[in-house]
Length: 446
Image 1 (cartoon, rainbow, N blue to C red):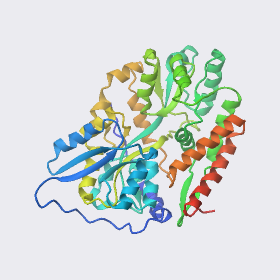
Image 2 (tube, rainbow, N blue to C red):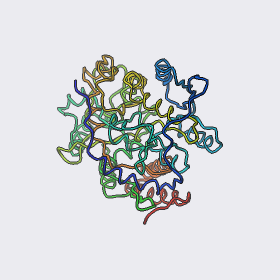
Image 3 (cartoon, rainbow, N blue to C red):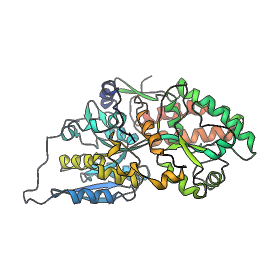
C-alpha cells in the first residue's frame, strides 16, 4: 500500500506570492530569530507550555516528554481558537506572558501576523519543509520566512451510501455533471431521499466547494489584499448548487443537526462531501449502516482532472512571539508533527489528515480494520491521501477569517430562506468582507 505523496511543483511560485503577503498583513519587525535560545544554566530541562484544544493530544505530548530529557512540555488545554482561544493567545502576547507553542488554524495565521504575535522560526526548522506536503507547509511561509509548522488538514472526499447507489445502477460521480444526473435518479427513487444536504450553515464547506472549483478569493497586490469572493469560478459553483436547490435535488438542512443525523441514519441523505475526519462522524452517527458506505474522490469540473480542496484548510503549531525558548519550541512543533509515533497518535485521536508526506510510516493509517470494515472493506485512507496531494496550492487565507465565515454563512442562509440566488449571497459577502477589512485598517486593492 503506497501512500507516500510526491511533492507538488508549486513551491517557487508560492514563495513569490507569499513574499508580498507580509507587507499586506502589515507585520512590522519580522526579523529572523537567533539560531538558538539559551539553555538553563542548571542543566534542568527547558520548560515549554503548549496551548491546544485538540482532545487527547496529551498522548502525543507525553510521548515527546518520554523521548526527550532536555525539553519538557506542559499542555494547557484552552478553548478552541475561534471560540476565544485565539483572543486569549494574542492578549497574552501583548501582555508579555505568552505560551511557547500554540495550536492555530491555517486560516488564522494571517490574523496572528497582523497582530505581530508569531516568532519567525526559519532558522530553527532548516529544511524540514521537505517532510511536509507543499501546500500545507506554505500556509505558514511569508516572505520566505517560516512562522508555522503544519499539523493536519481535512482533505475532501465523497462519503456515500454504496448500497443505495448500487441499487440504482449508479457509481460514485466522477464529474459534477454525473453528480447532477445521480441526484435526479436518487430523488426519483424515493420521495424522501436526496443525494445530499445543502449545508447553508457551514462556511468552511462552502469555501471548500469554491476552492475545488478554481476560486481564488484572496491575493496580494503590493501592500494590499485583493478580494474576489464573487469571482467567476465561485459563481459557477454557486449556480450549480442553485440548480440543485431549484429542482429539489438536495435537501436544505444544517449538517450536524438532529434532522441531518436522522437522515444520515435512514439514507434519506445518501452522501456527504466532507473532510477525512468525517469518517468518525459517519460511523458514530449511523452505526447500524456498517458495510453500506464507501468513499470516493470529489467530482471534477472537467473530466480527467484531479483537483481537491479542504474543509477550512487545516491546523498548525506556531511559536508565539515572546517565547523565551523559540528554538526548543520549534523543535517540539516539528517532532509533534513529523515523528512517526507522534503523527500516528495524532491521526488516531482525530486531529486530522497528517501534513507529512511519508504516510507509510504512520502505523494508524496502515491497518485500520474497524474503519475499513464499516466501509465494506475499502481502504478509505488511499482516497484521502490522493485528495490531500491534489489540493489547489494557490489558495490563500486572509486576515479576519472568522469574520469571513460569519459573513458567508449569514448571506447564504438569508439567500436560501428568501429565495434569492446564491450568486447574490457571494456578491454580498464580497461587499461585507471588503468593508470589514477596511474597517480594521487593512488595505484592500480595487
